[in-house]
Amino acid sequence: MTPAARERRGVRVPLLAASAAAWALLAAIPSGWSLPALCAAAGWRLPSADEIILAFAVAPPGMLAATWLLMLAAMMGPTLVGPLCHVRARSLASRRGRAVAVFLAGYAAAWSLAGLGLAAAVLALLPGGSVAASALVALTAVVWQASPAKQSCLNRCHARPPLAAFGPAAARDAWRFGFGHGIWCVGSCWPLMLAMLLLPIGHLAAMAVLAGWLLAERLAPPVPPGWRWRPWRARPILRLAAARVTAVRARIGIGATLRGGRPAGGRAT
Image 1 (cartoon, rainbow, N blue to C red):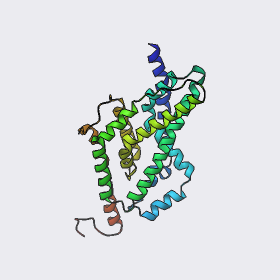
Image 2 (cartoon, helix red, strand yellow):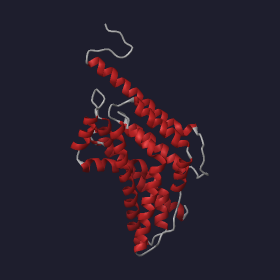
Image 3 (cartoon, helix red, strand yellow):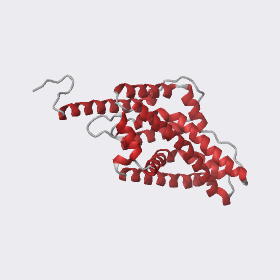
Image 4 (tube, rainbow, N blue to C red):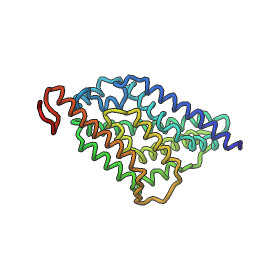
């Protein structure tokens, strides 16, 4: 094994272990306290605006932040092998741990800001649980997947900027690299993340599918930006949209049945 391959394995194994641990913790967290569950908590009916706002108000902020960071570690950890190898290769041996920590802090800061924006979008879109809102998000994601802007963000995720090896500049460069890399990651997949958060059920499974999809996208080589319709890029979005519509219709039918009514198109007996 070459030194470069050994170094890459030394980065990949801890990242995969951390990702696996994050998945295990997410699976163990009570469903009502995770961010996606709060976004879609509805019991047997669709949530109202007041209920969604109340859910965010009563949930401990620390728990919301922790579950968001766990989601980040679980889904995005495997995509950071290349950037972390770059940070380590450009750092002195005595400062590598510090440089990696600063990079990860910058990356987490970018995604934390994105989390606030996504939560605000959920609060704006979810009240009423309309199929129209879900369809709009799905359409936005499909268009974004084919857009030049999407490809530009993906290309920037492959950037490996020069990094200072020592002094205050080393910490500054590592932070800028981490924060900038996080921003371009957000730019490449924000519609997919929003679609996932809007799902009323099956969040863990949707996260797993989306994590694999994002990793596959990240491993693809950069190409010149342009409008490119790639059906394989649209499949996970359409699946998320179909799951959302099916769940909404099922809840409407269940709610009507529990109230003694009848589902749309049915006949009273």
